[in-house]
Image 1 (cartoon, rainbow, N blue to C red):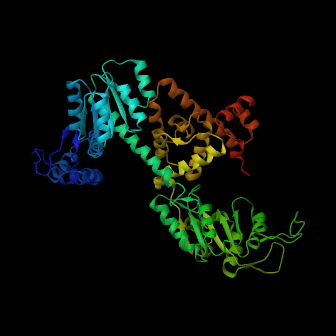
Image 2 (image 1 turned 45 degrees about the vertical axis):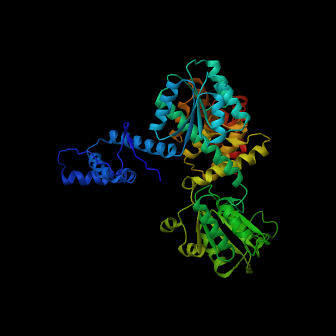
Image 3 (image 1 turned 45 degrees about the horizontal axis):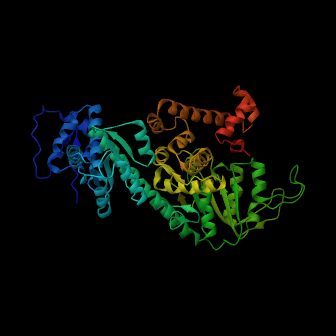
Length: 551
């Protein structure tokens, strides 16, 4: 059991057996204390849950007398130091340097930050250490006898030793740095080494190594037990949804599926049907928001010849087509009130009349409905019938939005990457760590459907075999999250500017196409751009007019 001792401004908290220092503070009024306690209770919980008991009382008292800005800095330092110590306590670092002084300085600093350290004086003894010990990262000097740093890195690649490699040298040059990075080093530092920079580089390298391991795990998992009827369900929330789907599939109960746009409500409906006793009969789906009231009734219940202008022959509706199977009513919250009455009768009596007809038609169907609306609120607003709601809501499946089940995001991203790489004939087979960080930071208002579109666009635009952070950032909505801009800040000015302008171009073009229902001529006119220029930008950013067609 590793003891995690918080560090704040470079000072380490004492262990359980040490005493907290005595601090004389002026008295604080009960009213001020109560007000501070209410505001800072969550912060105190974060801190005290991670600290040893003697310090908890002191911290609680100090927090109440600390400005919010300073408090934020303290907490950030605390979080960073705690996470770093958790990582470092399990990591063993090999320091390879023929200079005893340099080796000792680097080793001591690593040890003070709770890393376990092994030492070697040249590349050959370093390889021997790698062969016989579990090493998590290598920090090596460039110029050494017998086997220098670059030769050591090449040998590690030949021997398939996949651990982060950080080069340090007192003879820094741009060609050398380029060569080392091309060989796959995590970073390149010059002597004298800045201790804080070294720890930051090492931490990032270890995080990326963990990410690569997770990628390999995801590749093994995708297509196996994390699938249920093509539904990826790595998160506990989606596993619970799929368990409920499996239970409901064995019954004939009416099901209401609620969830935001793009969460996969139709896939859940298909999963219920395909695992039910009705799987050999039709599943007939219909979007209730797509048509006017008259046409909606005709689509659902059918019509007789001559029932209205254009009704040249008798036509069976969706309920008749699905007889013996399942009807899936998507966007059921948008059904007009008059049609809701007829739908209620179908649910109660399993019979209806075609539009313009008198004969009652009996059907045997299971009804699954879905909506992204708040139906109880619609009832209060007089837009939805309460009796119909209770008929539809026999069993409720609530699909969580993607932002609340981020465990599903990496396997979903890899699933879509594989799908669109194959469809677009592109050899993009991996996702860069920075790209996945950007995807995880986004709020995903469009949920899985939005992620699917972002991955498809990124695959189309990516020029390498790995989906990069730069490409991914250019495909995310401009200004949707500040985290994307923190990615740009790490780029050189001109590179960041080009990436940001690409995002602006894509969102600008898409905005006008959406406004004009995918009509390129009208969109280019309003944007005051030439048609050919507008179309070229569409091609450059992988934008299709069909994405914006309403029908």
